[in-house]
Amino acid sequence: MNYKRLKRFRVIIAAIFLVLTGLLFTDIRHIIPESLFNLVLWLQFVPSAVKFIDAGEAAALGFMAVLILTLLTGRTYCSFICPLGILQDISGRVGGIIKKRFRRYGYKKPHTVVRYFILALTLAVTLTGGIFLLNILDPYSIFGRSVTLFAKPVVLWINNLMASAFHLFDSYALADIRIPPFRLMVYVIPALFLLLVGFLSLIKGRLYCNMICPVGTLLGLLSKVLVFRIRIDGQKCTKCGRCAVACKSSCIDFLNKEIDFSRCVVCFNCVEKCPDNAMNFGIGSLRKKETQFDPERRAFMAGSAAFLLGLPVLQNQDKSVRVPVPVKASTVKEPRTSFVSPPGSVGISNFTSRCTACSLCVSACPNNVLVPSFKQYGITGIMQPYMDYHRGFCAYECIRCLEICPAGALMPLLPEAKKLTQIGKAVFIRDNCIVETEGTACGACAESCPTKAVHMIPFKGNLTIPETTDDICIGCGHCEYACPVTPYKAIFVNGNPVHTAARKPENVQTQLKHEDFPF
Image (cartoon, rainbow, N blue to C red; front, side, top):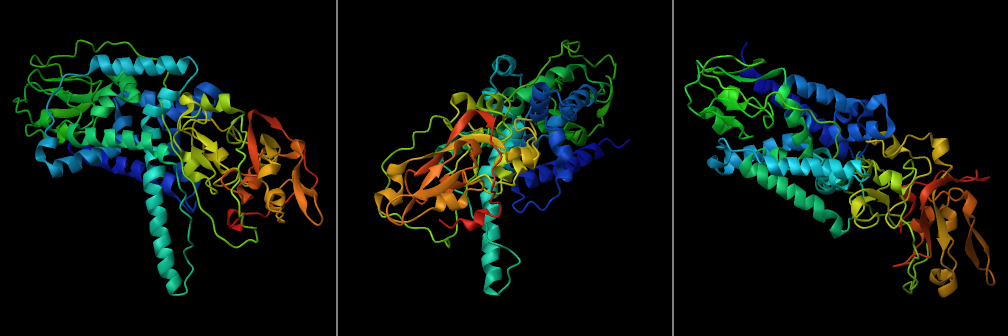
């Protein structure tokens, strides 16, 4: 067998997974069939593990497949499937172009204390009821947040630039898509981790994977008892050191002819670079006198998984509906006691204990109402999405986020069930309403409410003013988003910490779309 072809095979598979995962977060028109992404999501370790542990769903056994694959072939997940790992390989290659010495890695002793401490701390925090650390360090979530916050806006900008060019020739094959704004603080953590991972991989190869990433450390423990492995033929090896120089995990001690399989990501760089064909891939070890063995090969295995981080996206609007423009700024701050967690999350506590903050729902949301939290859920819920009705609303018919969540933090609901799930209640602040403060007719909130939980009642003269009916309100945020008053809305949705059932409304308005709101 030509073992040097193994690297070419790895590169092809890794490229496929990277492209599919990237498209998953940047498919701005949702034209790619979801079935194409099923395998990609199924094999992402942390979302799959969290979904299985919380819901016990057999369909979430992708993490078990990764564990079995690790026991057979080592950390192939890190090299073939993990999008952040593949991105690090690209960054490392770029580093080698900048300075050749960046790609001359060489053997280095493992950061054993640091990586096992981070793994133990992450497991301890996760198993005691919080997945904050898991969200921050999970490589899939880091990748998802980075693409959603930094790459997707670029894709939208290019789309809008091309759409403008097409419009000059009276062609409307491409439509302009509004680029959602984000709070600066939302970008801080994703930017820091992207810079950290990028910098480490640029000059140190897979250092993040082998020192910080809890997934890599956990899979590294299992890799000590793997079946198929990189092998050194002691009779052929001349100790030239080329394998160690090419090893991005810095795990080959060529002088002693040993490989630290807990750090090896099976990239096959060493097999390709060896001029003596002393490196190959096969079952067990080549038992030559010159070959020494890893003394920890018969090691223990570790149980569960856990990891962390996440981010968001937002949106702008057109201007065409007749809505009064306020003259005065509102003065009464919204007395919000709880922010709104997405439908299907059951409640805030349930949601924050399961969400891995990967931002896939944020990227997929057609109305950009889902945004990453900073302090809305507290420190343990940082980067987990919440509903920001100042920037969008939850479409009455839409269940996109419920269908695509890979971790089971958003449970699937039929459209009929979602329409009767009350995630919050509308609260009217009369002292902010322009009908009261400026004597101007409005009613934008009532016109936009799909269930008519917000309706108009007589006020002064010919004016009418909003009134709310709590039991048919589902907390979709149409009213809050439609209210033209700034900076504080005259009507807002106060979240239900635990979602409840709403009464079925008699009249339903379902035709409103995001584009219908111009203000």
